[in-house]
Image (tube, rainbow, N blue to C red; front, side, top):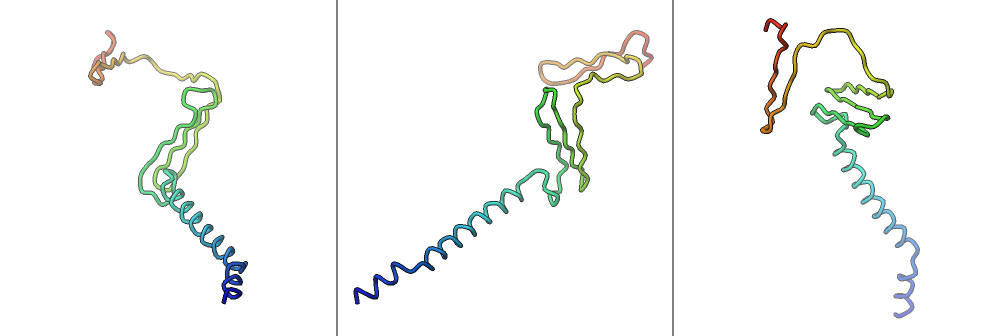
Length: 106
């Protein structure tokens, strides 16, 4: 009887079964991580991901529906044409107030 019990303890297939169980757990964890990713193509929300905010290599990824758009900073200061319309102030309670310039007819 003791001889038969020792054969079961030395069976190499038992360690393979344990490895398969371990791989199934790892696969399950990876599937959960992919499902919780904000840029998941199956998620219904619109998402904006900002990488390295305020630095020279800042990048923004915007997901709207199934469309992904990526904007990368090139380190240059932006310029454009137009005129100053007024000044916006943020109050202590978080409200924004727009004050038009004297020449503005609004």
